[in-house]
View 1 (cartoon, rainbow, N blue to C red):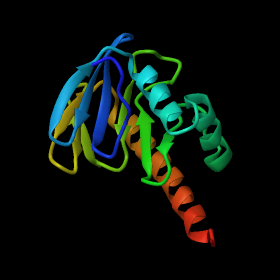
View 2 (cartoon, rainbow, N blue to C red; view 1 turned 180 degrees about the vertical axis):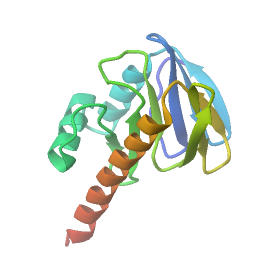
View 3 (cartoon, one colour; view 1 turned 60 degrees about the vertical axis):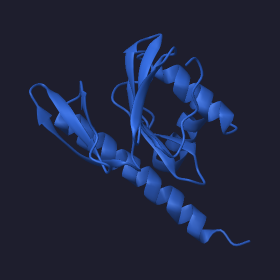
View 4 (tube, rainbow, N blue to C red; view 1 turned 30 degrees about the vertical axis):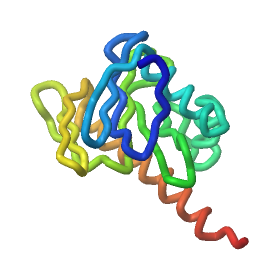
Length: 151
C-alpha cells in the first residue's frame, strides 16, 4: 500500500525506515511504502491541515513544541503522539485513544492497546509516560473547548 490515511481503527504507525512503515489497526497490521511522518503529513492534509499546522496548534493549546502530540482529526479525537522528535524520519506514532499501558521490556517498552494488541517500541518508560501525559493534556483541552461551544 502506498498511501494511507489514519482512521479510528489506527493503533500505531511504526517506522521501519524513512520509506517504509508498519501500520497497526484493531484487527490487522500491514506495511505502507511511506515513512511514518509522511503518513502523518498525508493524514493531516486529508483532514484539512498539515503536520506543521497541527504541531503549531498543539503549541498554541498546551505550549508544547518538542515531540508534540498531534490532533490528526478533531471530531473523533484522533490524537497521536510521537516516540521521538518529528524531525527524526524514523519515528513511531501511537494513538492516545487506543493506548492502554506501557511497560519495560528489556531496554525497550511494550505498548499495549485496549484490544490487547502489543507492540515493542524503542522508547523508555519515562519518555512514554511523558508523551501520554502531554497527549492527555491536549485531549483534555480539546474536549474542554468542544464542550464550551454553543451552536
